[in-house]
Length: 557
Image (cartoon, rainbow, N blue to C red; front, top):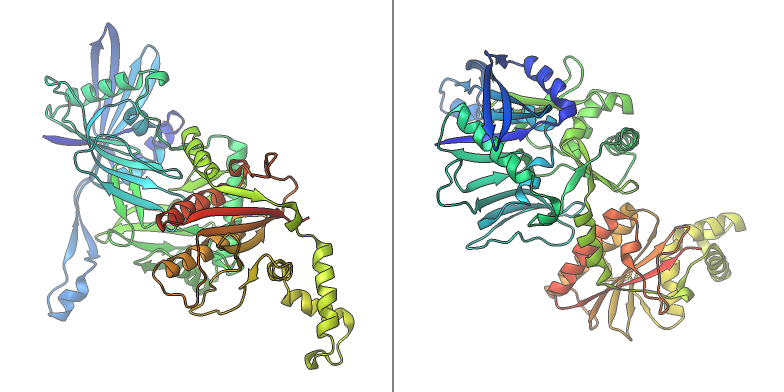
């Protein structure tokens, strides 16, 4: 029984894909031309094999240090050959292109594939058993999860999650012989076939196409997915944004880490654990290279310092070589290894490709955040006038302190504005008004605060943050979850009674969120995708502790 890993190639990338294959060690063997007639339709196939000769490498095995300990001779790695079966199908003057990969050749093909192919097929199939699902939850600390099931046949997911891979048993007729029921689906589809011939492979392709012709209204599962961005103007803008983010972060100009190196990637239908399966080599111009075992901002920042890579243009020239058993598998640019959410354009960068979230994903996410009680009370809006009045009052109280002797009024006011920044000022005013207790910067232990504000009337703990971007507002969520975890485990001394866990956002924006007559805020109208994802996760964590999540929304006027 043979296993085949089937890709569909994006039509606009067929030519480039062939150029890359021909430019590698894979060499083309002779073509086979085949014809098939199915349901009174004629299909013509051009099938070409690209094969790499097995070769002995000069590279030492990655664990040669162990042999050295026992004075054993170092082994050289024997590289397994790769192969690609390239299939061009012509039907009714329409051309479709497929590739089947063998060995590690899926790394070369994956970046040219039709990313919707696998899950378009998956959404139209029926299953007797769901074995595992791999889900991606962008912007979360646990951004990929692998779930295993026993005796289960429904696709299960939560809001804020998108499918990356499925391992399933398909429901097939008793006399079905094209492939076995166990299949794996990601960017590619992995089948086990009993007819180990080219004709057997073509039967698989024809069956897949038959399933894909099932109309949208008859789709069995609405699967939340990422959809490839194809708008050229948007792609230019997105790539400019990520180049700037990479530069600011790697050169230490940005304190927050705005992108991540995922631990787990799905390449085709294969799980790749970056920190255990592979090693990497950083390259920049001739002679500037370094092997690393873990991809991290720290490792790449150090590489930049070592080789004086100190500009956006230079960083764009960094290449990362993926190594497996000492063998170079694929060489890609830095952007191909990171995950990053562009909040402004509601797109995510993954495996070097930009995606939008499809309607199903956004629908599930919006419905989930709508469940959270969100309240707007205009009396808590914050303005520069409010801030200045507070600073003027503090000036009268503190101006005669010893540290301000000899300082001008202007310098003292500047110092007080730094001391009483917006959030601190906001929290102190809330306490002065009598409805809240201010715990901001009080009882700080183990590097965290219990909370910023406590509302005795509602027994609610709040984390407060002002901002106009997800990257700053998400800090309140991190703070809230740390406190929640420690509260849950009884690690916080003198904690008041808590029934609700709150986030209080002071938004800096031109237009207010949608609010009904009773000042309830529609959180689905929030246009910060990263923040909504994090709020969704926060809501689930709060509910798991038996507490109620609540959000207060106000504005900086």
